[in-house]
Structures are given as C-alpha cells and as structure tokens.
Image (tube, rainbow, N blue to C red; front, top):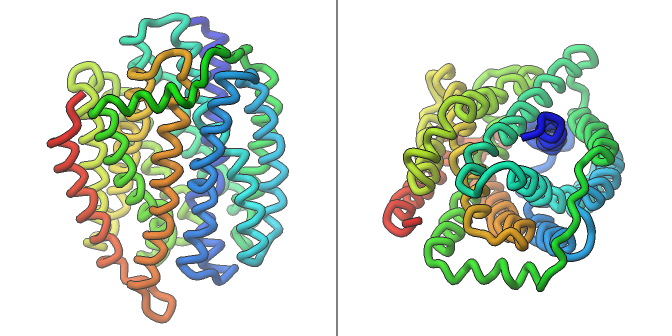
Length: 394
C-alpha cells in the first residue's frame, strides 16, 4: 500500500476518534457534577449520538454510494459539527444542551460509516478481500491511539487551567472537528458507485441467518456498553480517583486496545475466525463488569478497564470487518451504515436510557450503589455469550 495513502487514511481514522474521545469519556462528570443533572438527563444527552446513528449513517451511506463523493460529505459534516460543539460548551441547561448536542450528533454520526468505507475502499486497491480484514488493523489502531491522546491532552489542559466546570472537553472536541474538516481537503477522491438503490441491497444481507444472528446479538451487547461509558468516570471518582486524573486513568482501555491490535488481533482473525473473535469480545466485557461489581481492590478494578479495550477491538472492529466481508463492494457504505444504525443507533440509544434508569434506581441521596448497577450488565453479557456460541456460525 502506498505510504502516502496509508498516512492520509490513518490520520483520518485518528482525527475521527480523537474528536469523540475528547468529550465522551468525561462529559458525564460535567453533567452529573457542576450542571446537577440526574442519571436520566445524562442518559438523554449521551443518547444524542445513538439517536443520530439511527438516521444519519443510513442517509449518508446512501448518498455516498449513489450521489456525492465521500470526502465532501466528511468535510461538511465536521465543519458544521465543530462549530456546534463549541456552542455546546456554553450551554448549561438540559434543554439547550440536548438540542445543540442532537444537531451535532446528526453531523458526526454521518461520518462514522464513511470513514470505514473510505478505508476499505483504499485497502481494496492493494489487497484481496481475504487480506483486507487483517491489514485494516494497521489503520484501526489509530482509533484507540487518538482516544488515548485526547484523554491525555485534556488532562494536560486541566493541569494548566484547572478542571473548571468541565466544558473544556467540548471545546477540545470542537477544535479537533474543525481541524478534521480542513484535513478532509487532502483525502483521496472517493466517488459514488452510482448503481441501484444501495440501502435496499444492504437489506438483502438479512437473507443470511448468520448475519441476522450477528445483528441481533450485537444490538443487545451494545446496549450494555453504556454501563462503562456512563458509569466509569463517576465510579472512579467514588473510588477515590481525583477528577483531574480521570481522563488519564481511563486511557488504560485505549492502551490495552493498542497493544492487542498490534500483537494479537490479526492472529485471532486469521486463526480463530469471526465467531471466536466476536464471542471473546463479549467475554471481556463480562469479566470487566464482574470486577467492577467487586469494587475492590481498587487497583484490580482500575486495571480491568483493559478488558474494555480488548473487547472493543474484538467485537466492534471485528464486527465492522465481518460486515465488510459479507457486503458487495457497491453497497459498502450502506452496509456499514446499516451496522451502525443497529448497534450505535438503536443499541446505544436504548443502552443510554436503560443505563440511566438503572443508575437512578440504585442511587440514594445522589450517591450510586455501584455493585447492583454493574451486576445488571454481568447477567446480560453472560446471556449474550451463550447465545453467540449457539447461534452465530459464519
């Protein structure tokens, strides 16, 4: 693969997830802390990305497959999104913040499947279908690197300027989004195939019972990820971790994701296949939630975040590669969009609502009882592991 193209596509992947990683892991501390929002309101703010993923990826995927070049959609979405994140950093009431974050999420969600489809398109110029999955790890690895460096960057920011009211995470995300918009001018031209109705063709994949099993189980699994996203920052604070150190501590997951991607992901895909890779990802989340529910020793609980990083590689990235492997080239964007709609759309949305309700149910006078909270995803991920082993047979 041409090094210039590799550098450009890797930077694209890096910036895409640096934007999300700047605000998503720690925004809950601003919502639950200085802004005094409850668990349900926090869940709704975080639900803006999943809600947007139900609509935006499908529309963007169809447009990219049929009418407009991918790089132009990415530029426009990130330019508008960057401005909206900066506006969101000034909002202090639930209604106003929800409105701005919803508009932002509609822009950002449109870019998620397009980054993947552009990457797979470029890889397809150099590698066979069988090789693309393994080779894509060299590009996917920049997602956790970006997430980690965004967290470290926010920690440095807070070291110099203080934690403040927590709006700095949105400001950092907005700046990175504007940088991404400028970078899109350098992307390789990716014109639409322009044949047929791509979204309708993407639905034809449901004729495969294995694909149906994968999507249904993925839906349930992704509802449970939000116990990590919504709960971890506040949970670490209750365990005694200083708020200024939380972003850096949470990079443990990204460090594990990077190491696993570099040294193990390709081996797992080549030698164990999709079934064991995806099942292994769910098992990792199960182990993490079991350790979270124990609450001590603190070092073991904090270290268990590494399982989230490994699970993300095996299940989320592995799932995206699996969908690309079963989708025809002319519907690549729409197929990725369909996956995002099911998982990061419906799955993430219901996950935010379910997690918020559970957190509120097991709270007393503003303090969360974390053990029963984390036992809920323990049970559900265990059920998903068993179901995967029985019904997913690629």
